Length: 206
Ligand SMILES: CC(C)(COP(=O)(O)OP(=O)(O)OC[C@H]1O[C@@H](n2cnc3c(N)ncnc32)[C@H](O)[C@@H]1OP(=O)(O)O)[C@@H](O)C(=O)NCCC(=O)NCCS
Image (cartoon, rainbow, N blue to C red; front, side, top):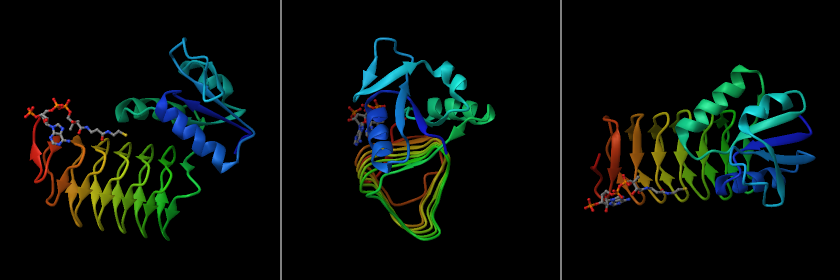
């Protein structure tokens, strides 16, 4: 672990991520990288340069990619990993993490989250505010679980999926990769075809 943390992405999501890093109290300094030259600082933390400049800080900083788009986050994080930069996970101190839970590198667990026993979270995931992930779940890589989502026991969420705010996924349900699940959706059966799903009961719209 290094003294400095560099967060790539100074947007709203970047602010929440930085707040978690501050509360973890592990880094002496925190700064952003962002490709929007008009953003000079965010939440009082300096934007020091652009994403491509990350490699110049390889020896002095840990890194976190705070980009909401799952595909973009994957692309940037995988590039950092290949180049040997130290990508870290961020866990809000108010979250509750059960026994035998694994959290992949570059994932963030936000305030008020509960992750119960024997759940696996892949790398680069966003486990957003107050979501509840029960026992024996498998959340694959670069998934976004939005605020207030409830996943029952033994749920599997495929890679790069976005589960919208307040959704409910019942126990033993598998959602294949390539899916968006809209806000407030209730899923009680497996989703086996990539697409966009909404509503109660759930229906495919795209
Ligand atoms: C599912 C979603 C991605 C679809 O977005 P979109 O592709 O732009 O779809 P549209 O807004 O064009 O809506 C298409 C249709 O689906 C309906 N619809 C969209 N989202 C819906 C939802 N969550 N529940 C019920 N119906 C929904 C729309 O009313 C519209 O119906 P219509 O054709 O009868 O008018 C988006 O609506 C959504 O729910 N996003 C989640 C947002 C979220 O969780 N944010 C948290 C970020 S941290």
